[in-house]
Image 1 (cartoon, protein in one colour):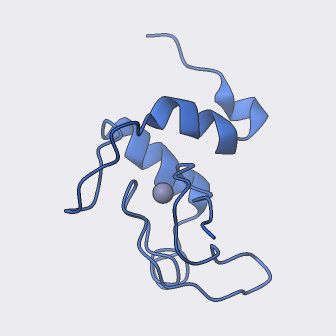
Image 2 (cartoon, rainbow, N blue to C red):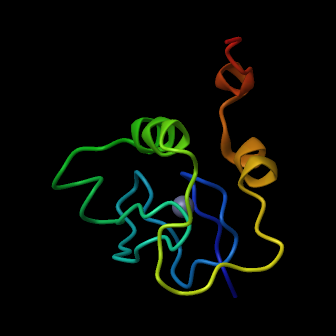
Length: 91
Ligand SMILES: [Zn+2]
């Protein structure tokens, strides 16, 4: 069983992501680097804030472990982005 990261959409987390109901996870997402139970609680990042920072930083693979061959952050992000924020800003 694997779980989807609510920040970046990575689909192979080993633990269910911590939810607002308080389910515990202390996993670090290898894709976006979000640390459940640390970044969200202790450092008060919301999923949205972390996601925006990660996108702004170029959506880099965060872990030292090899990234999956077919990892496509753009496709995955579309699955977790709130609909209003899914539109891209024009540059
Ligand atoms: Zn992630």
